[in-house]
Amino acid sequence: MTKKLAVLPIVTTPWVDAQGRPTIGFFQFMQAVAANNIGPLASAANDAAAASAGVPVNGLYENGGQVFIRKV
Image (cartoon, rainbow, N blue to C red; front, side, top):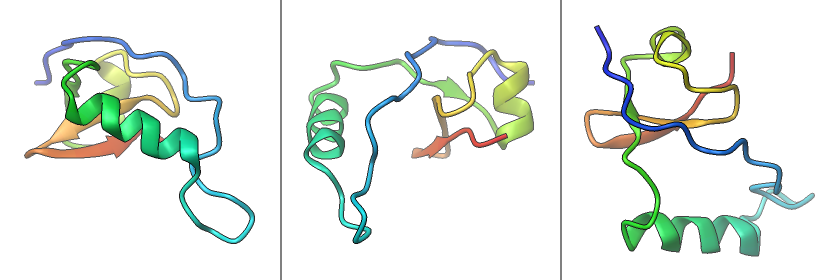
């Protein structure tokens, strides 16, 4: 069973540009995560569990210390 920790806003900025390179928005977001300004994230085993925990599509969740983006 997953525990809902927080709901994050849906990401509306593209993470990569047309060439597949990370965008400035991505780097700024990751800096905020690293500075502990975002979170806590819901802990979930997979997208289905993240959905059950209330994570929106394109929202972030964590599993084992790794951050994932819910896709379905």
